[in-house]
Length: 349
Image (cartoon, rainbow, N blue to C red; front, top):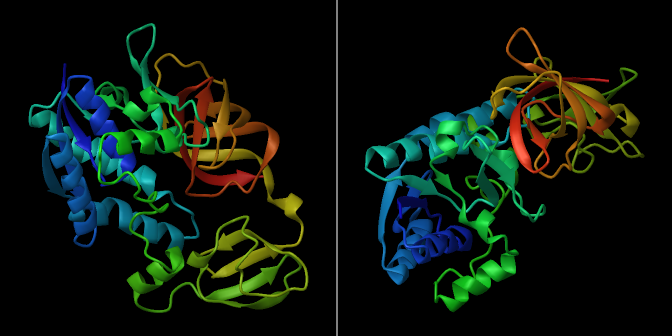
């Protein structure tokens, strides 16, 4: 049996993960991250669960690193016309970066989280990241960057349990855990009510990114309050009326222009270029045939991946995909297994 540090947010998923590990006979300690604000609600809920389970609990203050490696790149990304995924930043630098390193240094054998994904051993004994059986809950997309050395020290109990969310809550109820009815967390944990644009506006403290809505024929259709309010492919909430549906086709942070199109077909692209490439298997042969997922809610599609001299990759889909967006991840799958991924830099028609 192993000594395991469990990242506990005070939610039902991480609480049931800790419960499962305990029932497997592991020595378990709960750890709650203080990432922004005072974090008291999450800390109190997680502490209550740990008391109910009879395990230790501590708080790890990662606010400074979270600000530097997650919040700041998130804000800068939107100001630069990109659509970043902060969960990927957090998993790389906090959950499976600092937390994992500190836990191993403190004598733990592994760390665990409440993510819906699986870690399995391949024929060569190497740890491999796989999607959760329930694709509606699968979170392998935001874990693609985990290297082998990290995966070998990670346990994902909810991937093992392979149960729908209501059954996870039932397990928590039967165990008398005080968070069984706690609502699921919002998409971005540090964004309060009002959405990401209001958050970014409050952070920069001054007008930034104001500019023009421009149609494809060069007509100026109006003004907007900042490029950070928009993402490629967006139709609703544009704040401009054209008398017909319009979509964001391109964002230019240098000029402040947001290019609008009435032709949704112009949002579709076959070719993507990636940076920050991460490959999770040795001896992959390129060009590589795989299925590629370009956003969290996207259904992965067939593509060919080629390596580029600059260390990035080129992805060519068999069929054009709608609105690939700079800053999002493109994640490669072969069957249920994640074999790599990278950050989308640009797309070509």
